Length: 191
Image 1 (spheres, one colour):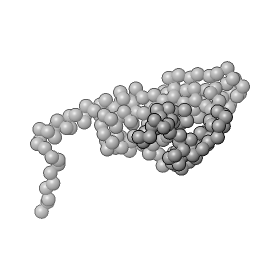
Image 2 (cartoon, rainbow, N blue to C red; image 1 turned 90 degrees about the vertical axis):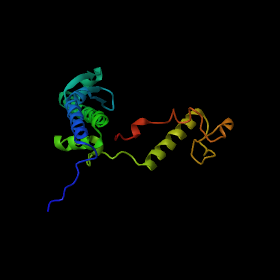
Image 3 (tube, helix red, strand yellow; image 1 turned 30 degrees about the horizontal axis):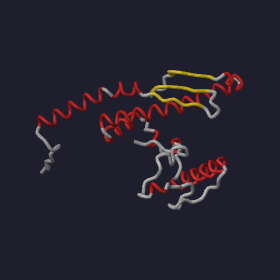
Image 4 (cartoon, helix red, strand yellow; image 1 turned 120 degrees about the vertical axis):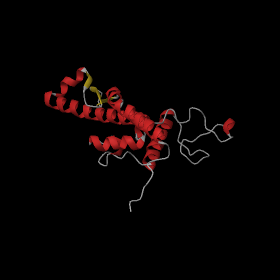
């Protein structure tokens, strides 16, 4: 005997409406991916590239100093920077698709396309650990204190540079506590 399992919670009319909604959302994926762009530059800020999620070059900017690299190295650098920009664009496109279709459908699209989201790529740089982030932050705070002429002392909360104002004893931190030392490039993007 064949066991019958219900398709989902809802009437046939609701299931048809859900299927139509998904179909409409899937048809918008192409447009969403075309809108997503990524921009990257080299460490020396001599090359900046903007591409879409398919790798189409939208903008290439070269500083006058880029001529010093020579044609082979400059070409290689442009390709490297374009690859990073495309990874950013692909991730941005999947983020937009996930908002529209949900995480499960986006993962299915990734699998079908053969191009995983950079945030899920097992070969990608995993970013830094919390401990490494904290170590770097403490180094930046010590350097900022040194430049300001003071010495970095652990605050009452035990964190180097964790100074709190007397007026702030209710548990919150000063508004500008981490704004000068926070480096968003140390965070990893994943939906």
